Structures are given as structure tokens and as C-alpha cells.
Amino acid sequence: MTSTNGAPVSPPEAVEFPPKEIKKECDEIVARYPTRMAACLPVLHVAQRHFGGWVSPEVEAGVAEYLGVSDSHIRGLLTFYAMYNDKPAGRHEVWVCRTLTCWLLGAEKLRETALAKSGCEKPGMTSPDGKFLVKNMECLGLCEAAPAVFVDGKPHVNVSNEQLEKLMDACE
Amino acid sequence: MAKKYPETKILSRNFGVENSWTLDVARERGAYKSLEKALEEMTPDQLIEEVKTSRVRGRGGAGFPTGVKWGFVPKENDKPKYLVLNADESEPGTFKDRYLMELDPHLVLEGCLLCAYACGLSTIYIYVRGEYPLSIERLEGAIEEARKAGFIGKKVLGKKGFDVECYVHPGAGAYICGEETGMLESLEGKRGHPRIKPPFPAVEGAFGCPTVINNVETLAHVPWIVEHGGQAFADQGIQPDPDNPKALGSSGTKLMGVSGPVKNPGVWEFEFGITVKELIYDYAGGPLDGREVKAVIPGGLSMPVLTADELDVKMGFDDLVKVGSGLGTGTAIVMDDSCDMVEACENIAHFFADESCGQCTPCREGCHWMEKIFARIKGGEGTPADLDLLERLFINIEGRTICALADAAVWPLRSIIRKFRHEFLAKMPGTDAADGEDPKAAEAETVGAK
Ligand SMILES: Cc1cc2nc3c(=O)[nH]c(=O)nc-3n(C[C@H](O)[C@H](O)[C@H](O)COP(=O)(O)O)c2cc1C
Ligand code: SF4
Ligand code: FES
Image (tube, rainbow over all chains, first blue to last red; front, top):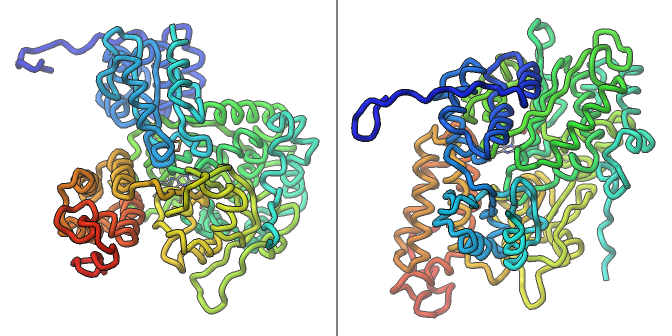
């Protein structure tokens, strides 16, 4: 591996995975499938939840070792699936749906509110104070109650700008 | 006033019942009776025949006859066989399966178990999109209860040789994993890159083994079919057209929904036969005060739009195809007269560009390209030649890719630029439409549209 200026860098040191708090849960997941690779998605969910809302290169390497796949396989999943974060997440994660029904019912304003309130420069970035990560998401399947947002994994529907501000105010 | 088209309560019979998702309540209301009946009275082949007789078609968007699909699973094969239940429901504007999973997870499981019995499947994976936390929780709870009660596990209900396991597999945010082979890749722990078919999943699916893939709502119909017989199901809804072998009819009932700027968005169940107009006006309450319906996508995002004067068509598989659209997921998105169709196209193109898995050049490049063209037109920098360019792009994308995501991008966009051409021209400096003249005249003046 080389850094951007060409100097060699050492590969990340894998964390011990799974740590004891989530070992049972991870082992049970692995047992559901005929291959270890198949456990990647559910195990990454558990790992991300356990390690502060994102999967660092060290966690990535730990998960890879545990499931017998390459680091780059895990990296490929982190960049493909919208729910995983491969950069430090904020302490709180706000998803704003941007797809047609929500867009028709005011999602753009909600996104502006979320960005302004959090100080995030643009969707997908964490605020400078590390408090919020605001993400644009595609249809969240709550269209009959659009516009929809998620705050820290919980859905909120028929959300007004004021309500979104309140939800974000309630985040510590 | 004409009588309102009636609602039906078959799939939705337990919606609104207190604690409907628990085994106790579900059993009081008849859950697993059909499974007991099938295991006692029917052979797997008889069950497949019954489903064929019902003419039930897939509710995931493609409308393939379910009994026929089940018949493709090879019988003489030592490999384990799988059911992957498609609970990804990431088609925009679609939320019907969520109701079933949250409010009647035991109905969903019973449907899965009947499918497993009919096709000789040993493991059920329910692939639920990761953004449905409550669905995941309710399904996992239901699986636990069903296992304890002997509906899942070794020798289901004491039936020798019928062993079946069931797990929830959470997705992680990718529309393409709703495509059946993208889903299989994702289940196997990879990026959701759709596979080239054949081989079809029934022969070589999950982990290289025979696999049935069905939508949640599709399988939720099966318990009723077992209870009342396939013919009773087939007698409901819209009959096949004897003069058109492709028109397989729309038998049974369907969860239908409406979202967008209407007074009462939601989901309801109907025997097939209700029109788009009745659904939007009589159930969804019509447009907001002072607004008019401008366009409707009848099922999800991936179908061609209907204009306000095309809504007298039935919400049926063949009926909507006949008018150049499609039933898709059966959940309509309404756009009203405040909607700028150029911006709507930009929004739609962005979705597909975002969600393209990137394997096929026409899809990967084409969706971004279309989005850029719409952005250009929106910014007042488009010319009528851009509409021709879009038409050429459509030709070079549609039918030239591994999966149907690319087609799904073309269909709504093409229909919008053809049906609302004047709105695009009105943003192009120098056209008559932009100068405020009669939009129809402006349309006639321009080149391109077929
Ligand atoms: C891009 C794309 C996305 C799809 N998304 C879904 C989905 O979210 N849910 C679903 O049931 N089917 C979806 N489908 C259809 C599936 O590929 C498949 O046809 C369906 O699950 C089969 O089940 P059925 O016959 O019961 O409808 C999608 C298809 C494509 C091309
Ligand atoms: S059509 Fe698009 S989404 Fe489908 S396989 Fe090709 S690139 Fe992927
Ligand atoms: S479009 Fe936002 S939840 Fe469906």
C-alpha cells in the first residue's frame, strides 16, 4: 500500500473481531448460512452499530479476517451499500429521503434545514463538531406519509421543517 | 353519484387488529390453518397445481405466474433448495409489503412455508431492506414464535421429511438488491450485481442451488388460495383475454396504494377492477384543495406516466400495458399541477443514476447523462436537440443491459418528455413555447418526437 505521496504505509491493524459483547450475535449470524461470506451484510450492521456508527479500516480488517474474505471485499460492500459508513460518522445520523414522492412534498427544504442546523457542508458529510452526519437517501418506503426522515435509525413521517429542527435539537 | 368501488379484506384482514403481529392473535384469526390443511390433505404437486389454477401473478412488479415459476424447480436434485422472499421493497412509491410484514408477519411466514412445502425447499431467507427496522423486528419475533409452536424447524407439524429453517437477512440500502439476481448476490455477501440469465434462479440460484424468489405480497396470497381453492381466487378480479395469449388476466386481490400530493394517501386492498381514477379520487381523496392531478405513475417509479385524462383505465396487469404503461408494484405516485416536469425528470434520473450497479455501460453512463441533460434544460440552457438526444439515449439504453433497472429508468422519463413536451420547450430559449405561444403549436414545430 502507498499513501497519496507515494510513500509506503502499513496496512491497518485489524481489531479483534468480534469483541466479546457481540461475539454470540455474530456467531449466530454466521451459522445461518452455508458460506461465511454470506454473513457479511448482517455482521457489518452489527459491527457498525458496535463501533460508533462507522466501519474503520481496522474494523474492516477485523471483519474480513473473521469471515474469511479480503479487506477489499469488505471495502467493496461499504462503498456499495448506502447504510454503511466508511468514514467517521457523527454522533447522530440524519437521513433525508430525496426520491420523487418526498421531493414533491418538500424534501428539498428538509435537506436544507438538516444541513443548516447541523453545519454539514453537504449530504454525506459529518458536521465539523462531529455531532451530525446528514445523508441523502433514496425512497425509504414511507411514501404514504412523505416527507420521511430517519434520525438515528428511527423513522419519522409527515415531517415539517419545524419538526425536523426539534428532532435535531433533541439530539445530545 | 356512482357507487364507490368496494374495498376487500383478504390480505389486509388483520390490519388494524390489536397485536395482530403476535402468534396468539394471528392464530385466533385463523393463521396456519392453511398450512395444516396442506400438510394433511395435499401433496406438494397438488399445491403447485392449486396455485397454477389460481392464476396468481407476481406482485413484485413483473407479474410472472407464480404457479409456473414453482413448477420450474427441479425435483430430482440432491442439492439443498432455497426460498428467498423478496422483501426489499425499494421501488420508490411502494410501501405495501411493509404493511404485511409489520401487521401480519405470520401470514407472510405461512405463505413462505406453503411455498417451501410445495417446492421442497429447506431454508427460507427473508431479504428485508435494512431501512425497515420494524418489519425486521416483527418478522424475527414471528419466526421465533413460529419455531416454538412447531411451524418452523425439523418435522414441521410432525410431518416427516418436511424440515424447514427460516431467517431474516437484512439489506443495507441498495435498490438493485430488489432485482432477483442482485438479491442473490447480496444474500451471498457480495455487492448486488445482477447476474446474466440463464441460468435462472429456479435451477441455479442462491449458493448455486435451486431457488424460488417471490415477492412478499405474492406469497401472502397462498394461504387463502389453499383455504378456498385456486378456482375461487381465479374467479375474482379481471379475467384473461381469450383473444390475447399474453393477457393472463389479473386474478384475485391486490394491495394498492397512492402517494404524493393527495388528501388521503395510503394503502387499500381491492379485487382487481378498480380504475386508477377511482383509486386516486375515491380512496386517496383526490388532489389537494386548489390543485389538479397532472400525471400519475400507476405502480412505483419505474412505469410510464399517465396524464390526467388517461386515468379511466383499470389497475390491472394487462389493462395498463394496453395503454402503454404497467401495473408495476400497484402503488401510484401522483404529481399535481404545481409539479415542474423537467425537475421531476431530473429527480427521477438521479434516482436511477444513484442506484445503477455500474456493470453495464448504457445504464451506468446513460442514467448520469440523462440527469445532466435534464439539469441543463432546467437551467435554461437546453435546446430542442436535447430532446432528440434523449430519444437516442433511450434507444441505446432500453433492452441493452443485464437487468431491467435501465429499462425502468427509460420508461417514466420517455413518457414524460413525450407527454409534456411543451414544458421542456418552454424552458428552451428561442422556442415558441418559451416565448409564451400556444404549446401545441410549439410542439408541432419541433423535431424528433415519434
Ligand atoms: C431494478 C429492479 C428492482 C426490483 N425491486 C423489487 C423489489 O423491491 N421487490 C420485489 O418484490 N421485486 C422487485 N423486483 C422484481 C424482482 O426481480 C422479481 O421479479 C420478483 O421479486 C419476483 O417475485 P414475484 O414473481 O412474486 O413478483 C425488482 C426488479 C428490478 C429489475
Ligand atoms: S442495467 Fe444497470 S443496474 Fe442492471 S446490471 Fe446493468 S448496470 Fe447494473
Ligand atoms: S419517496 Fe421518500 S419515502 Fe418514498
